[in-house]
Amino acid sequence: MHLRVRKNKGEKIRKRLIGEDALDERMEVERDNRYLYFPLKKRVQYPDTRIVERAGVEKDARPKSLKESLSGTLSSGDLEYVPSSFDVIGDIAILEIPAKLEGKKEIVAKSLLKTFRNINVVAAKETRVSSEYRIRHVEVIAGERRTKTLHREHGCIYRLDVESAYFSPRLSAERLRVAKKVKKDERVLVMFAGVGPYAVLIAKKINPKEVIAVELNPDAVRYMGINVSLNRVNVEVIEGDVRVETPKLGRFNRIIMPLPKDAGDFLDVALPALKKDGVVHFYDFSHSREESIKKVRSLTEKLGYGIKVLDAVKCGSYNPSLNRICVDFKIDDHLE
Ligand SMILES: C[S@@+](CC[C@H](N)C(=O)[O-])C[C@H]1O[C@@H](n2cnc3c(N)ncnc32)[C@H](O)[C@@H]1O
Image (cartoon, rainbow, N blue to C red):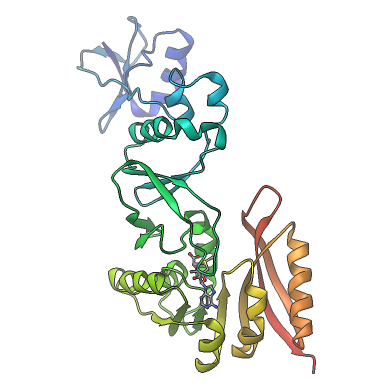
């Protein structure tokens, strides 16, 4: 039994049905071009509405979170340790399994697979991101045995292997923020370019005069090449060390430096490659925006440059006390 209601009266009627405990919340509210159909627990009579018979659609009763899906399977003590969030790269979920749940990680992973239809692989983070390539080893604990996937972000697609190259879906909004600043006539250098998420996005959204991306990890470079082709964009991909390659590339209107721990060690090659009025997006891990600005000022001053800070944004975190900060700046004057 359903109550047929004109769409413009829907909200008012819904509230009234809930108030009178007449709405059957186990069933979906259905709709067509003109009407909403509210599933009823009991007969009601409201002006301008009509009781109609429909088959009805049961609501998806699947749990909404990983924790919810495990209640009843794990003890309440164990439930406390179930992660409330995890990264999703393509169809791979990457979880941090707390030591307390180590013996139950397969139960957790299988439950995650059942709960989220878009996930086909569940992997556990084995170590913190480490090494020059910023790679994270993972252990596949449920689903298909693979670490390769296809990730979608802002209308671009990225083929990648979560084990052989760095990629963080958490930086998606930050990449878009930077991309939106790029102008058509710019030459852009993406240092530490990974599998290409800055370079491809900028080329796709803005298609500026030139985008050059430099990356050291051969696996990441191979995927970046694939991603440039997949997205049909114009990016020059260079495999090599930023320190060696940058001086060969001329001057840029914009240089992106997404290597938070060590970007400071490369300012000596980045700054001479900047055009007048060129902008640097400098990534850092620190406790505050002020701390990062101070660091950038001090590093650039040591190199003989005065800078103008355009912005400093918090765009993630490394751990509960260390933020990922991007300082956008341009060179104000040469101090020497
Ligand atoms: C934190 S990741 C960022 C990757 C990518 N920009 C992204 O946002 O997904 C840093 C990348 O810099 C690369 N890298 C580290 N040192 C480098 C260097 N000296 N020259 C070029 N690339 C380097 C690493 O291999 C890694 O892929």
